[in-house]
Length: 596
Image 1 (cartoon, rainbow, N blue to C red):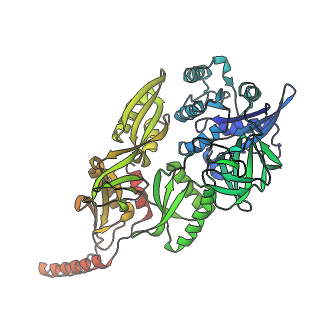
Image 2 (cartoon, helix red, strand yellow):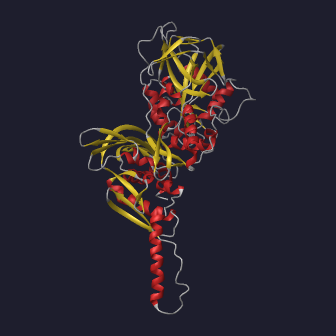
Image 3 (cartoon, helix red, strand yellow):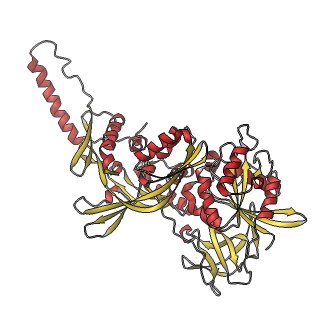
């Protein structure tokens, strides 16, 4: 066990984490030149294109140092804020972490939040200055930022480049020298934590775990403590580029278990594995069920494809257990699903995977968060959809989820960033200068306000320099109202939203004028209205297309023209009762882009 090292990599998006992992795999000869491709651990096309890690991965490397053989387990983490629970479980499985900072960009928000996670779990931090080969690299300035942040010695910072391979040897030596070997008694009762799972269509769910105490052998009868389910370990092994079968995995090591589990929801990240015959006394601390934060309706464009969409959602959930969905119907869009996502990026990824992997074209309704509504009797109800909202006469008060947001930006953009956050009902909690020209702002604000267009606007006003990270801090009371959109007096439930009372008038006015541009003209007038309860707060009209019925009247008495116009008016009125308004797909997404 003294020659095992378990470590993870912490970095902000696009600081070169996957490239550096590639170099480590090449230097330790874990992968042959023939099998190598860039971003080897990112096996989804979507991950490669966007340059982000969506699913965490683990891989074992062998390295010889000073005549001794060492086993290095790299437990890769997703870098995005939506997957912070997965990151925390991966970090829990390690004894050390590489803190990677881009030498040209400096420290960003997610670097800090993931670093705090690592420090909470008492991990040894090895700072690495990456992308030293770039002409814009500022090694001395960024080294000062790292020293201020973690209080290390400037000589401890390793200067490296994932692209050229410079400094990768030093990183391998630092992992062996600085990170402690895992502790644990191989003869104690089995205690292992699940930090990830993948779905194999032939073998079922494969769970990745780290063993703290005891030993897991093939054929053992195991018990998952939080789900309460029992399984037989059909196969256990270690994670190289491919899975390698082993007779047993003991304390300190990382491996996989296949036990014929068909349903991905039975394997929860953070669960504890132990033996049925000789269980451990306490589970690994920190387990929680992943709760979706953002909800949206997903509907097929063609209503006949509802069953195909259901099959696609089932298959997608096998690979992504954090996705939740339930059937719902809408008067405007027909049958579809109400889906829960971890955040906005997660929602985009699910939508894109549906279109790519299952060739489903879908309409996504306005995303919203879940609220707690309390009626006059004091009973609470979770509201995920504006249509579930109790009426104003029954409602006592509503609570909405709040977040703590960290924004790191250049000091010249403080003004615009602050005004954006205050516009989104944020409250400034802290302001810290990391260096003379970089400042960290801390806000508390409602999650619902960042769901719309917050991230895009933040990037625009800071010219791409601001980085953003957040975590939930619970529910607070709020004055929210349900804003309905009506077309010719009919409610369009897919466009209704829960919104703060102070913003309702402005929001209603903007959405009505946006819909007026997008809804095609018909043979009759279309009234677009925004209302709160029975009160209409904004209105726009799409004027009718008119045929010139008086063209044949040249000269003569005005009453002839008036008679023809009155006849046309009657026809229009009848047509309006019979005709229905076609709402184009982009109208449902217009709400997200009201500032364009």
